[in-house]
Length: 151
Image 1: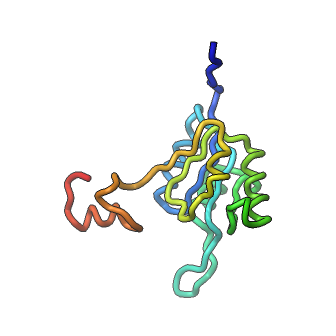
Image 2 (image 1 turned 90 degrees about the vertical axis):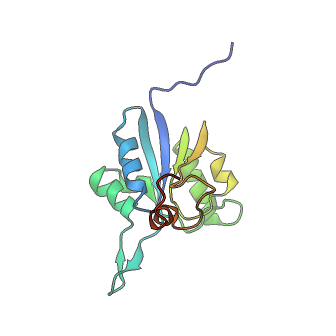
């Protein structure tokens, strides 16, 4: 008889760097079926006229709205464990979280296969458009600009 994997809650490492990721992160964090054990986002970047360093919206939401510990939020510049020490350390950090799922939405970097292989169940990529109608950086904006009623 095959044993069924059915935990009390699923451990999630969430990857995103864009505003579209915020409602997904909030929904996962508030749903008792899930435990967000880590957040991966891009580094803080200069923004605005003064080019002041601004905190990434996912990082800000994680800390300030959801109360996720700073130690559970990472902003790696290198992800590939086969190509750099930083990538190796990043992969080890994700493995230590023992995630059931990686949830990716608008992260903005290619995630190497070695990272995608870490979760117990699978990585899941949420995309803002129904492909192949629109591709690239602005699928939702293209839909609106073209006055599409459906995608």
